[in-house]
Image (cartoon, rainbow, N blue to C red; front, side):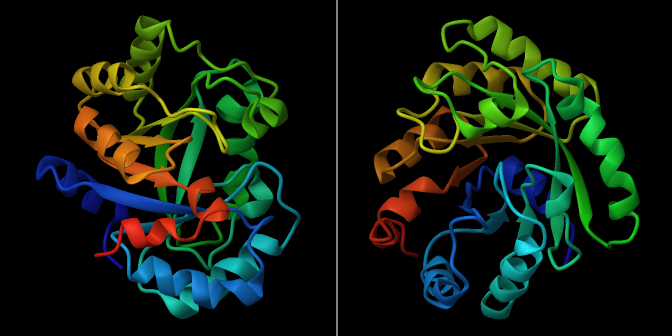
Length: 241
């Protein structure tokens, strides 16, 4: 498989929009993988992300192996903890929660991960991760013990994203959180995109084709959708190729 990151950059330059389907190992049953991935393959999805805030040891590796049986799409880890690292995937978003001030999620977990990563051939993509207020507490907020950035503090969000880029992050990820009551608004995406020279990922709260289109038009290079599929697999019918 070629460079996952380079492919994302090239798509951004060409303004080709990408879509990642996020699968939570804690919620996806192995017996459902074949049918679910079949629908993913028939959709406009370009990537599969696997991960969750709270996942038991070993579950991720088994799930990723099963997913890889049914698709050629790149499978990228979106880990909530180091125990979710597995060489069965193609790459990993090396997430630094730069919206918070918990050292564990800024650098601590990353140090723990190094010994595991050295034993893999995963493509490691440094990613600045910003949790944005969405109207309810998310599992990311609870597990990381950090507060999201307030939606109306747009300049703080912009400056945080840019700081991530200047620190050497290769991607910036704006996250409203799983099950968000509403997605990140257009103005935030637009202004963050304008300040960045690296690709922008947006996820959380996107539950319709219209909201997906709005995120793209505002400047998202990649959109991540998870809960929409968990709650209504018919959503795949809206985004068929």
